[in-house]
Image 1 (cartoon, rainbow, N blue to C red):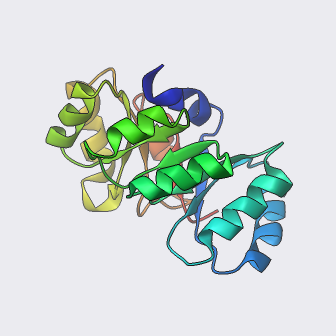
Image 2 (spheres, helix red, strand yellow; image 1 turned 180 degrees about the vertical axis):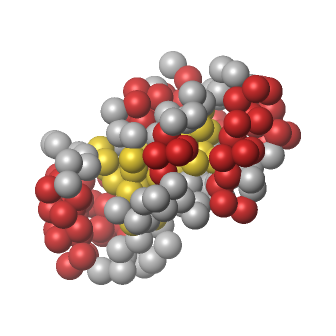
Image 3 (cartoon, rainbow, N blue to C red; image 1 turned 30 degrees about the vertical axis):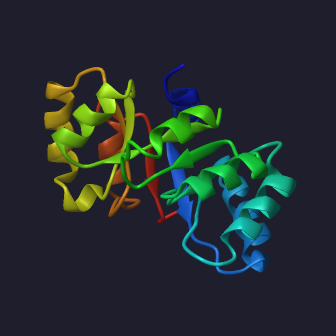
Length: 185
């Protein structure tokens, strides 16, 4: 299955909070708040030294009722750590032919980031059909995604970057958007 069934994961979660934890003490209150709002999916970024511990804690305490993802994956070692942690999905800000086979062999759902038509075409050549559009606000936002919908009608996107509580419904209204990621939640 394409990208280890990433569409199956994303289709269940129209909005995916992208969260950067600085300390494990933040995990339980944030996860409880998200679940109280009916959000059962989270992308935890690898932007702080506490990230792996926070992912492990979220997976241990909430993994039975919430999809736990790892974001900002840019190295092979991070993919290996994702396997060890047993996470549900991985998100990369870009597309890379060196990382591609490691993502594919991980058996974990994954979504690489793209911004340009050339990157989308590169991903299509790898057999991918679902991409993170990042950073959406800097690469044309809604207008770019509308155009990509015409040029690449079989491709689905999860836009992230600069999307707000006010603008996310406009993104979700597009036929080529499977879900939206953001930090407003």
